[in-house]
Image 1 (tube, helix red, strand yellow):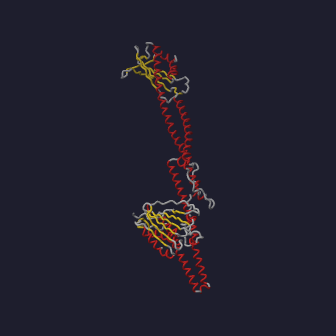
Image 2 (cartoon, rainbow, N blue to C red):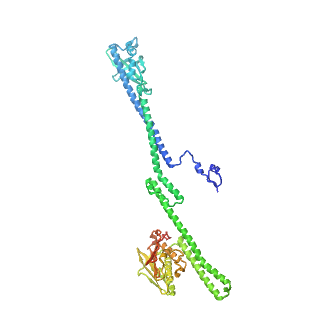
Image 3 (cartoon, helix red, strand yellow):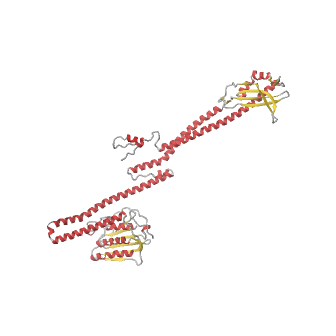
Length: 567
């Protein structure tokens, strides 16, 4: 046999006959094998990926929002700084010019420098109002195209003041905020002048706020991830519990416990797909248990059948061996003894031939090799022909054989030769077990929805109540105490039952010891439309002292019926 394992598994084959779980070794140890673990990790991964994708977007959007707020605040502080400086300058200079043009050169009034720089006004405003680095440039004012006054600053006329105060709680330099320029122009009787105030590197709480929010998001994400782990584990457990139960039930079933099933509460606690899977598993287990039980019964029946066949064949073979041994001795020279022994041997050969034919017939019926030739004929002719074949046997025993048929045709779908065989066997048994001067009656009448009912009654020895459940078993001939029932092969009623089963009918027997027996065969109008009847429960043997005993036989399995025939 070719080794289909991978090369590494073949190399690690070990000792001869030792099974190497190379499939397990070939798996990556880092990959969890449990479905519950994989499901939990997948759920955690989805939550982690969601947090990983959402958190940066949230932080970025908040950063943009706070940046816009700080820019707006810085513009407001720039306007306030320009207004305050203008108020200080106007109060200090009064009606004097702020900017003067001397010999074509624009110059700043020295009083402004003294006020802003030497007086510390600019530093005060930078630390307390602007809270940023302040740059101020002066120049003349002019009329804009829209009629408003705008400043035209001169780069050399200005001062710069760096922010020197300590930042407040949660504040820090924020170079990410772009510088803000605020123009201011005024008109007075002496001179139109203006200035441009620029604020840069302000103190803001944006960075600390973003850091706090980021930390809060990390904490919340960690809590959410932990909750997700717990929820994922719980959901995965609930989801995989039916699978676990199904696996356990499958393992028990594989180990031979045919009663293993998924509990009903586990079936209905899972999802729709798992419920369907569990239900199908239970159905499969039921059918498997039923099939195994049928196989066991068939095995036991086959074992008993072989034992019975061996026993039945042993008797005529032993008799013929005895006759041959006697013929080989002194009895072989005696013509009368030789003729007697040869006649007895011929009888035993006929019995062997009849037994073989019945065994072959019964085997064909049970194996389904015989298909019924269903015809919508009048069953009265079939019954009448079968009874006529038994008239000679009844006359030889001095038994009265009567037949009662309905006046109207009794048309049902049936196989005439097979139904004739049923009637022949039942009437033959009745004649065999009825003493001289007795009576055997055959009655036929309609039954049910167009079906037929055939009754065979005799006044013979009857059947003991304890034997009724076994009268249709193969090779069963009744109590040995009854000489009449100890003859024959015990296959006639078994063949009758098989034929009746193939017609989807039933056969029942009612009997009283020394009072006679009554066999009732019920046939449907059309066997093709009758469902298979499940096997009956074992009958409880009636009390021997009862007035009457009845046994009912029903089909055990589907029999071959030619459904393809047209109605």
